[in-house]
Image (tube, rainbow over all chains, first blue to last red):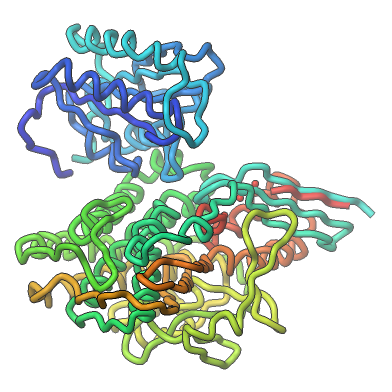
Length: 171
Length: 431
């Protein structure tokens, strides 16, 4: 398995997912942009690939990965979910918004099956209200962005959760 | 008489949103409907008023899996309209780019979407738990395809480097050398893929397909050719609409194509293979023999083997083109100035089959009319016939098994619903 040796390797990797043109689906991208401004040089920041299988290559072997995405679980819009991902995968009730190319849920499932997971993976989900094709976030989701950003900043300051446990058996 | 309805409201492991419904009385199928409910996307309407030069990038957005096909058909249509002759070196680069898309799209479908049907898994994740080496091979092949798109298209999803007349930028020798080594590494994985899928169980079933694909004298068709049918005729791309027509059905957002006065036909890997078998390379023909495949395959389940053979072909052809690469003197041919009013048609072979584009341009190259016929629209009626035959052949299957067999039958043709609505969900009613 090829490993990235870009500068910054060893830093935590923050991945924002979403479609910028489907209202609240851009929440993950917005938080990513704010984190980039707040933590220059403290982490690597990536806008998520449209092809979900590419996530496996991005995060395999990384120490610490945080993914931020819009979710739709029926909670109040703007609710922030924090999920420490383990081998049981992501909860099916979360309905991570996905492209036709597949979803984060599938990337995590395949990642565990193939031994291509980071040491730790935490997913921050921001409850969406409106995912129609249009610009602009809905007000309650917009209002949740500073808090979501702050929580990820704190997350990255902390020691991180214990091992997600996806070390590569097929290196 | 028992009436039975089988419905699947949301088809999994296909590109886009669709469903199907089958209604049977006794052993007879009354209705087999492939319903495409992904909202209509009105691309043909909003191309009107845009510049001819924008068509490749706008239409590429129809599909995240086969954007190159849209770029290739639209550029070909515009180049025909404007009477442009693209330099052979640039044509070769486009063929290489198209090989990348075939590798990427076919590898995804074979391993993540279709293989679970044959091996009895509900999805690729469960398949990966028991066969990690196979799924890892699929992902590695897909990555090789992505590398081609990145090198020639600028990025792996929705490439941005194709323009009418050629490319915006051509790769350097060093970039092509890296790509050559990626493709060279993928050759063994592609051969192993043919072996892997040819070991799947294939019940001895044959469908009486009318196959329609491009053919050209010296090469397996990707970016150009003449429209050829197994019914024994050939027409130039310009006459496509005289021979084939699209019509609306009330249950689907996608139009369905038929051959006028004939009926449903099939495009895609089975059709290309049957009509172009002798233009495959010796290595691919040998792999087909080793896999026990005749030169014409009418068993829809074996489409997975033909798709694997096409991956092998695309890797080998891509490697040949990468090895022969010389940096072309110019990345694109000159555009006429001013751009005249004109009309042009382009047909190329998307991974799922022929993709037709026609544009009418006004003065200055402004699009006045656009017509796009996607491969899944063309296959939709023929897929419904496959479903009907399957259900009538296996009247005693319980509902769960029949439903999964029908879903498998749909996936045999790798429908891309997003394309067809420019375009799945299953309903089985048994009476």
